[in-house]
Image (cartoon, rainbow, N blue to C red; front, side, top):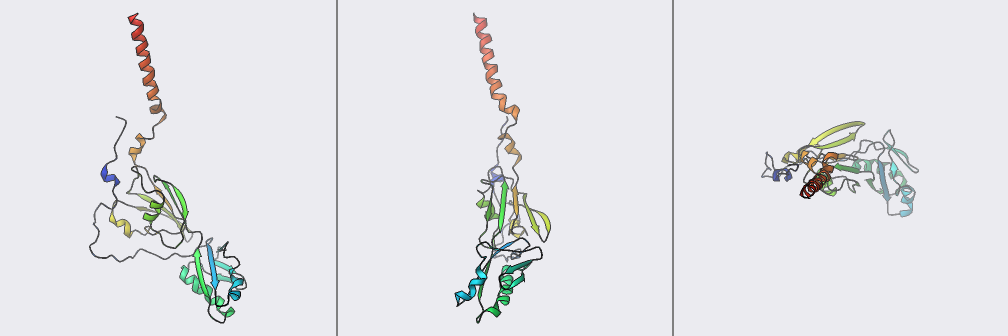
Length: 233
């Protein structure tokens, strides 16, 4: 009586209406990553003359910190404004500042080093991991965290996001194909994902009273046996 079952329907994703479209669907909810204060950028500069690029690569391993004004400081060049720029736009901004130091335009590559996502709650392996590129979906994040368990509540996945000095809270319903249209489907740096457990899990995580019930039953059984044997004597 103390146990409960997880229904087959609770283990399915994307099973509620509306159904998937038959034709290819245009992606309209992806937004390129934008650089924020306290981000750490890996900036690498290369050219036909490696010695010309060397002075600008001194801090690439440790990264360049974006300050509260959205500026990043490069050796020799000074401050460059990159706040709220996409990585592609930031590359162009850095390259334009470097052009006077080269006979030919240098090649600039920028990567976000602190693109981390935290997944916790009712998943196989709650974790925090770093993303190598600038595009990851909530499906991939949950898969990396060991996927849902049989007790995951899939219709209200919480995403906590900090962007432009604001904190927002969004919910994603994995039981519906509309998950793919959510503004939280594509994740951003430092997003936190929380998966709630279903109420049925309470039967597997017992309270202190239910933990001692087996011992009470054993004790009661032994007492009954002792009384029975004493009456037979």
